[in-house]
Length: 388
Ligand SMILES: Cc1ncc(COP(=O)(O)O)c(C=O)c1O
Ligand code: FES
Image 1: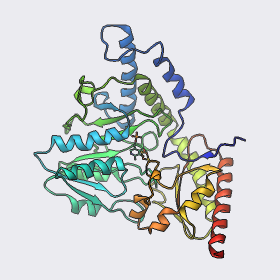
Image 2 (image 1 turned 180 degrees about the vertical axis):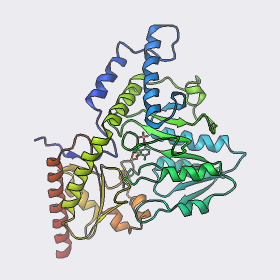
Image 3 (image 1 turned 30 degrees about the vertical axis):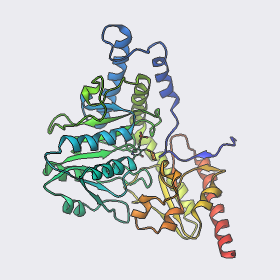
């Protein structure tokens, strides 16, 4: 058995699937052309590959290929969506609505806009992590230009009611953006049925490469205006200049194609693995399972553990499993997860939390090892605290 810990942090990132890597490789070497070169075959073959990914992504979310704008990931897509709308619709209004449990790549652009004079409403969530639609209803103002609500939460896996939110926004002529970084390939997404105007995507949560993502920008009924946030050669119809990174784009397409083809069976398998982990951990008293029980990503299990110190818990788990307590970027900070405190947890309980992100390459045997070790660690930490 490998001595490396079992990887269960698939919300932070996932390995590149071998099939994805194989599709990417030729685009680093023999098919290295610039997709913007229109006068030779090197450019044409790169352009054809980029076009293919546009088509795959468009099909995945029921959009058209022209509505896909490639970016360096979901962080950039969120920034482009939020700041791009704020700037383009400045005359119309300066009020934005978002949610307390959003990723920092949504909350921070909003905070930045606040320094420029925008008003931001941050909706709370209910105990299960879902927003209350009556709160959203109350938050709308005549000057609201954008609502940004994520599709799937990166910590607790909760799926927000996109279709209902989309309907409410469309009725009021307000642009609806969703950060679908954790959702693409994992749950059905349909920008028409859900009335979504902007959607951020990324490849590295679905076994594609890091550093590539996209923003879906609605072109019809209604056409969304965006102020570009990066100026230059006018790529991506002027919305995002910069030479397209063909190998990454090819990988993004292949990864999405595989995830869609396997979505139903993979979700069944992941649900079983999650249940297997959950039922073993349920033997312990004082474990909170965070997030809505059914409106959630199949591979996500997030627990808060009473009676243990958060840092000691993670340290105890580390040799056997790669997990995190919050999101990957905020595990570098000492603050408790803003998502878990938004659920109403105390800071201490929020610290003593573990996010399990189960993925394509995990097995039932690994889940049993992880459960056994987690139980033993929690029991031993609790014994130590009662001794002192
Ligand atoms: C919900 C959510 N939004 C945005 C991001 C950032 O995506 P990227 O790493 O592609 O910039 C992540 C991933 O960490 C995420 O989970
Ligand atoms: S950027 Fe991914 S968890 Fe923070």
